[in-house]
Length: 376
Image 1 (cartoon, rainbow, N blue to C red):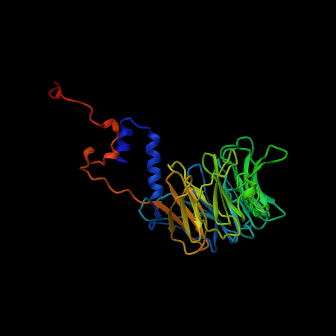
Image 2: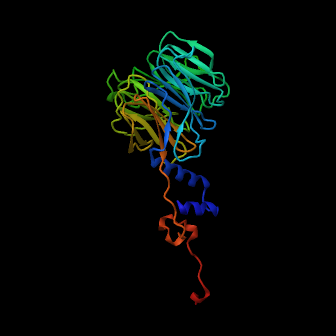
Image 3: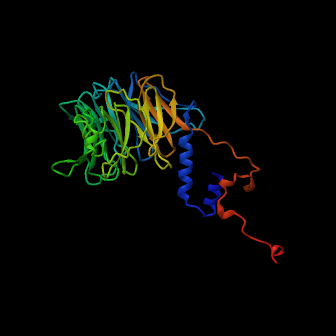
């Protein structure tokens, strides 16, 4: 790292390389932070979390009791130990509280003045953050398991909400009209909302090799319910997870199963499972609720890096804070835990370039000079 910093300072290396290296180091050192608590407000399990993308400061949570809470993640006290306080909550006494479990909360991608929530009470609500009153309420005939607003749309303000047995939805961060959905029938579909027919493709775990697939599993992404999906930040790949205890990585342009093997990914959830992908690392990582733990895998090789342990019950959701490479998780134990990069070891004052490991020294610093006494 010191070699990268010296090369960056001298203008001999790409500045993005140092950023990627430090972000990757921070993710690899994530640990349960004993000095940072998140105020406990929920009286039942936490199903969903979302951090607003504008400042990365405010976090929403939704619980099985229908309660919604907004937290301030910034350490205003500047003390080493602090608690992330709840700004407000839509509690059971609120006149517009959801009657049943809140399954998804999401900030409006461009402004913290609006957020959305959907619930098993068959409603989706648009909230004014300042007044804490619903600006609009949409009523559906069936249960709303999940919803999502496009992070890149400039020509539409559509919210994708599916009823009954569609358990996960996600807009592409690359193409504003493309939507991915996962269903209880094991299928994952890609949609273009501008097309009359709608569906662009149905992902096939066998990549069209029907001879290897039975008629029951042909044109399915998983051999079980698909209850979680998430695009990589560049939108080039899509990760899906199913109750067949498998996670799959897909090329979002071709619909091809990349066949990355993550091993058994335990998934016993009967509803949506919210997992997260890192941003700006090399390699990128995916954080997946795995029973009472969170499994950390490399996205493109499938390697299991570590298991984050700290919850007492099933983890339902996690969200990644890309500005500081922090992770927050919600569980049936009613707790939200903060996973923070371990502090870097202090650098000795007397360190010199010669004391650095050889591989850390940029080749540009190697001595290529010769004195006149050595010549002839």
